[in-house]
Image 1 (cartoon, protein in one colour):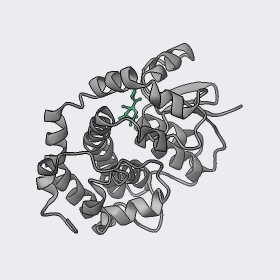
Image 2 (cartoon, helix red, strand yellow):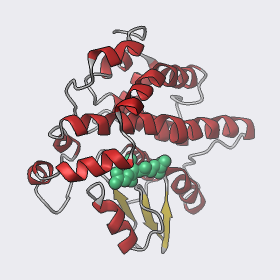
Image 3 (tube, protein in one colour):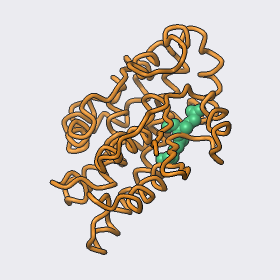
Length: 250
Ligand SMILES: N[C@@H](CCC(=O)N[C@@H](CS)C(=O)NCC(=O)O)C(=O)O
């Protein structure tokens, strides 16, 4: 039975699930969707929710990177995504929760804030994707779609500034997970796959990369997502980047 993963190219939780499927050695077909249009397509193919990643596997439908991780573990226990030791599992699951609930969204908001101000870098996130329309054309005519996505993700000035203010603490927490061996160890786990793509996505923003690349979080992303697609040239106002000034390399 074929396994189908619905993604938006460049979406960090989608890349997280791709890493999990590869870890499990499960072959799959990737269905690339454009933002906004994705919501209608997902409903049309029978998913109850409107976000990617969304997975059809063994006749079932699962949505959300954490739910998908658990379904993959159930269907194919080896190699595991979750540690067997209960104490270690609790720590890994907490790091995974942090990745999903705290780390993903501010980075998503910064990306959409950037696209709202210059949507042309969007094309670089879709390299190699099969969207059904030429990517150049999609970006050229994509103003309304970007505006809708930015609104859906609440990528306002205020929220982008708040995301930047939060970033140093989020990066410190990822570094601490690496330093304590919860992630970044010899055997990758679900939290590695959840967190590394968010850091990889943040590093596609030229404004953010210098504050990340030389720290443990940056090394984690280079290990798991060395070729994260996309590049956004500097777009954020210089004074908004002040909170990052104390972090490494800036
Ligand atoms: N926390 C969820 C996030 C799901 C999510 O928000 N996905 C975004 C892409 S990263 C989405 O589908 N957005 C719809 C859109 O942009 O139209 C997960 O890990 O699955």
